[in-house]
Structure formats: C-alpha cells, structure tokens
Length: 353
Ligand code: BMA
Image (cartoon, rainbow, N blue to C red; front, side, top):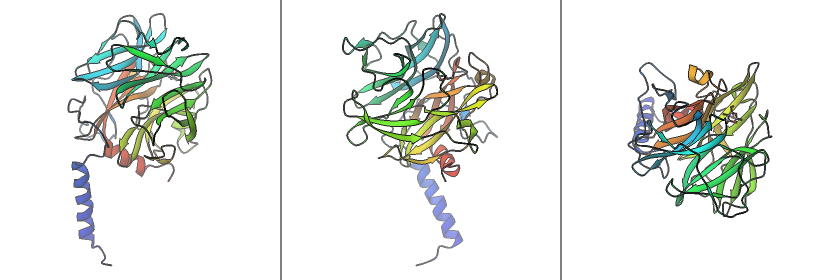
C-alpha cells in the first residue's frame, strides 16, 4: 500500500473540508434563507454566539404576561410560527400561539391556545408549559409539560396554527421535557422524555419511547444520565431541548443540564449525537457546556441562572442553526451557530471518549 505523504494528506484534509463546506450535513433539512441570523462577532471564538439584541422576546411582549420563555418556533408559510410559554400576571402557566415574518419580531396572542380535545374523556390540563413543536409527516406536533396530577407530558397537533387538537398524554406522571423526533424511527413515532417528581426534581435521565399511533407508547430505552465531577454543569439532571436535528453524523440533540450550586440550580446547555437508527445509543456527548447563564438577562429574572433551549431552526443550504432558549424563566434569547462546528465540538470534547 502506498504511504500518503504529508503533502497529499494535507491536500486530502483540505479537500474533505471543502467538500463538507459545500454539502449539507443536514438530512431532509429544508432550505431556510430567512433564518434569523447574525455572523459571529469578530474575535469571538464561541461555538454558539448570542444575538446582539437579546433577549429577542421580552417578558411583556404580549398582553398581561409576567414572562415569555422556554418557547418553540418553526418555519411556517412565508415566515415563522411559534408556541410560547406565557406565564400571565396571575402567574398561571400556559401556552400561546405567535407569528413572525423574520423570527425576531413576534406577534403573540393575548390568550392561551384553546385546544379541542380529540375525545371527551381526555383529562383537563391544570397548566401547560415548556412546549416543543416539530413537523412530522403532515402536521405540527406540540408536546408540553401538562398539569395532570403533577408534572406530566401533554400532546397535541395543528395543521395551521389556528385550530389545535389535544390527544392523550403519552406517558404517566411524573415526567417533563417531552420532545418528538421529526420522523418515525423504523415504523414508530419516537419521543424523548425525562421522568421526574412533582416538585423541582433533584435527579433526571433522558429516556426514549416509541409508538405506532401517537397514543400507545412503549419500547422505553435509557439514553443518558447526568455526569459527575468531570462535567458538573450537567451533574444533577438533564433534559432534551429542541426536537433532534437529523445530520449525517447522527441526531444532533441540544439538551439542558443542571448544576446544584450553593445558590440553587444553574441551567446550562450543550449537545450530543445520537445514533440515527437506534437513538437511545449515544455516539458522543460534549463535556463542556455550549451556553451557560452569564449575561444579565440569563442571570437575573424570576428564576436566576437559567438557559433552557426549546427550539432550533436550521437552514440546509448553509448549515446555519438558530437556537431559542428561555432566559432566567423570564424572557427568550437567541443564539447562532453552524451545524458542522457544533458536531466537531461534540466529537472533540466527547465525555464518553
Ligand atoms: C424546570 C422547568 C423549567 C424551568 C426550570 C428552571 O424544572 O420547570 O420550566 O425553566 O425548571 O426554573
């Protein structure tokens, strides 16, 4: 076998890098030229960088809101639609619909979404919060934390962001951070969740479940646990963020992790890569965080020190990504990045390696 010289090896590395620049890492991704975007500031080497006008959605951007955070947005028609966690001035937790042309300026409804129950015996929700939205097959699915004898997972869908249907809760209480995959795995719909308790939950692993019909869920598999002293930002509990993004290197999952500090919980987030066919198998998982609460709007608010991602927009033409995250349980922030760089970061800083 011929040995590669230093020169040809370097050429091959450059060639592969150029190839990667021009071929998307996203699978079945859509072109989204209107993705909200700012270039990385000069001199900044962060893998994810913050929008200069953060918070992108302030706490009072809709009528009678105490706070707007931990919210989900998707491309819709010629702009964007979203489902927003709006705690109102009675501190009732609920979700509202919103629309935007550019993903930056949002028009958020004055009142919560009025779900039509798919059958009369679907239990009432005592509250709704922390929605995730993802398009699967023919409609937009919404998964949220649903008050039903404590924290449970609620599920519903819409075709048009005008009428919304609520279906059965997929899992028993207590559970939070339910997130659907954007396509079936094998022949089944797939869901990540984080079994919890009915309070502020000092533990938590991410689990995977499957369903043939979005009603009956099984084949539960463990995905990831918190880590120990080598990665303290995720040592108390972890939970899935936005719907996983399908890439040639695996499902890219942004997830939050919690440190139990002497001043209470600190929520940061980072990313992992899951196997495309068996997503309960973790290929790599970053040891450092990507974003931790450091800016004033992340450190000061109704719950200090929280960065909590719930939505990611991607553009398959350029592999750009925009992540929306809740800031201090008060407002909504936006960060930008590039899929290839995030994947490299996860692989180069793999906590499992
Ligand atoms: C979690 C959830 C989130 C919240 C976070 C920090 O348990 O309730 O909605 O952002 O705590 O308070």
